[in-house]
Image 1 (cartoon, one colour):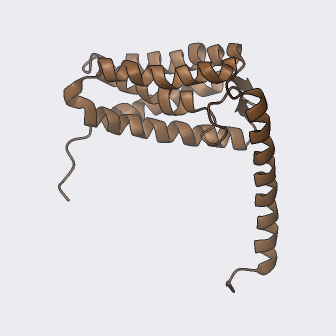
Image 2: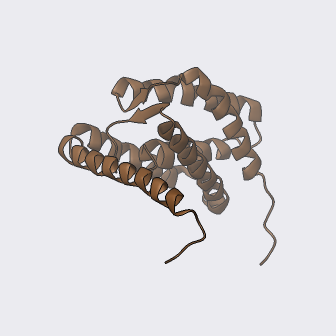
Length: 186
């Protein structure tokens, strides 16, 4: 099919995507031999299931929809930040559950959103600043170093200290979203 785009541009961009696809296939082959069903794979599976099991048990049942709305925002934001960090070579992950984006499912789609939801529901009228500081501190100075120690998270051009203000602003946004009033009808 003929397009209005420059054929040379289409060809060049296609070459870049071919390189990405080839590299991804090489990575999948490596992952199948060196990660799938190894200890790091199983530990990542536990980190993917356990937070949701905890949330299901301890969530405030009458606030489930609101908490899931906040958790979904946290999940999307976390995935996008991870995507940018990996794509721009700031960090990478090993021991991943599925060799695709988001880079580290246990953190992006499980630990982060569940931690946000549990913190939002715990003492909802307590100081937002204290909760924000707790969240940013735990994520930056406990969570990230723990995954560094496990070898699941490898920093290249990043420091855990850079993460603190991002987590700080991130939790403030999540808190703000959790306080939204009912949506208008459709």
